[in-house]
Image (cartoon, rainbow over all chains, first blue to last red; front, top):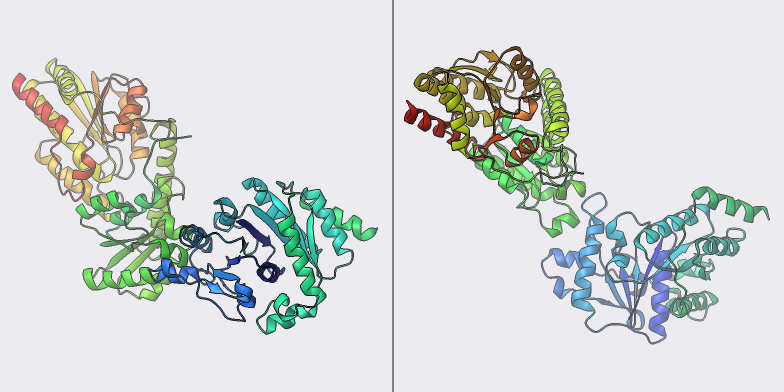
Length: 263
Length: 358
């Protein structure tokens, strides 16, 4: 069983990348799981025809975590949303820890081929690091664009992963059409010592498919955009280069980007 | 680094709420948090209840649980003053005590104390409780300022010579009561001059004061002279603490003990100890018997007899070179709810020896 985790700056498109990767694997015949760790619990909707599934923590709160029903979506992809508290109360991080422990205990007795954990935002507390700390995901990918703040967040995540001693498989560029974006992300990845595993171009089909509750792989299967997701999903599974990253000083990151723009 | 377990800010906040005469204390956290301290506070007449947080509350928050608990507290106990203390669990997840108290809308005055086990020294919990109480007019600002100063001094004292002054202290029960009592009896029987210093901390003085009564009784039986020094000023501190001093003075008076030197109030032990030290240096004593928070009294002669209610402090004192150190650990449980001086084992042993020797 391969277990991968996606991290990245909030709003960078992690859930879109994650859902399309899981759809690609499912389409290829793999038993694939999407595990959403965001309390908003909306990352799997594109795999489920726009439906929201009951969250694992809601079911646990009702006293029956063992009866949680995992959602079944596009091509049999399994979808589990950890869920969590409303904004401003409780502890979402603790929720992730508890849910993943139970998930491992109750749901992976018949291991799937690949599990993708979609982890919200930056690494902010021990709970958000749980997917990589407790024997779950052993492969980390960081979604970014070529914009400074997205790369800044990616660098911070690398710092967290270095503290945890976790190997990172690389950066994924979810393009925003920033000038020289591919070069910028590739250069930063190289400097971090982890490489760039793939690039997904920006295209309106992503929003069009999301509007109808679908991934691009499902909603526009013949499009170049769908193929980009398939290529990325394939590259992630084929990747064998994992390294504990070497985070940069933010000033160094800025200079690197400035150099690239000046060239 | 200090390795041994020691009092924490949550418990200090609870005790401080007791000092303010809170009738109910709500512990917002897991059912076992503060369990031992709660039992003792219940012995002092305070109702302690818990919101009993569970795993689900950690994740989703427990504000509803606190609001419900406060409602039950009002129905069951009809209090006029209620304290709510945080715990590690509730405070780390960011529970909003003020909002819950406001939502509960109790008739009683409620003091929410935002405190948890990692808030710093235990005195930090006491200060937070006093600040919250002062904000709501339960404690005057001048009293808050005085207490802040005392608690700051207490923290410095513990770091310099007390519980946090050594990397590790093991519980030690010291010498036998017989050994200590015999030493005191022998000095008195030889016509010696003995100074008895009580440097008490709040209710614990109900126990330590029995040594003063026994000393008076013994001088009448076997001879010698004794002077008494104590921080029993009944005009200092919160009303409850003043009551302790009044009740102890009443019982000492009945036993024929007059305090020759008053060094401060019962919550002033860090500075009262300094005052005691300078008074001790002015006289010549064949023996000094010091009870209570004795490390607050600097430069004590190593021949002094020390009485402590804390076994780890006994270890501390013996490692500092004091040979005759006695522990009276059960003062902690027996003093809760006391309204008069308690009979203690060292004092009773002294009485027995002096009767035999008379």
